[in-house]
Length: 159
Image 1 (cartoon, helix red, strand yellow):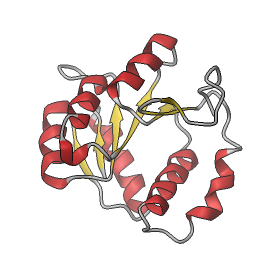
Image 2: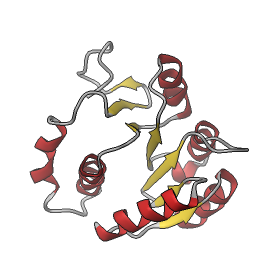
Image 3: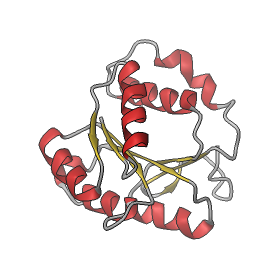
Image 4: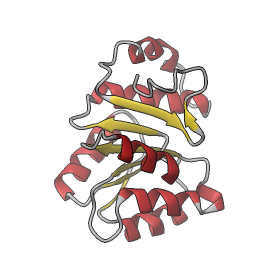
């Protein structure tokens, strides 16, 4: 897993937290460093901030999606932006999941457990699936690269 945030303290704390959940975590403090690290390490998950200088999270996501070896990694964005224009931009950039700040750590842990399960690396993720249904609607926006998660109301792209 790769954590990307220009706020070093935020990246360090997030990496520490995710590491405690059993993930192998690397950090990058800017988009260019993140691209190089992702090319070397091929992470299954990239947790990225949207508001970063020089290369923002949108551009980083687009460039990660442009790398054939990284097209299938799960991109999770942390952001304070919930406006419709940002939702469209996130979808176009290829971001899979958006957590609105301040994100509940149990939501992130559940998403990471689900990804482990999808990859066949976790036995206990199924126990956490029900937790997603209890997430307050204002905290998580979910869509796949084609738009809203299939089977969901397109007007309700928020869990």
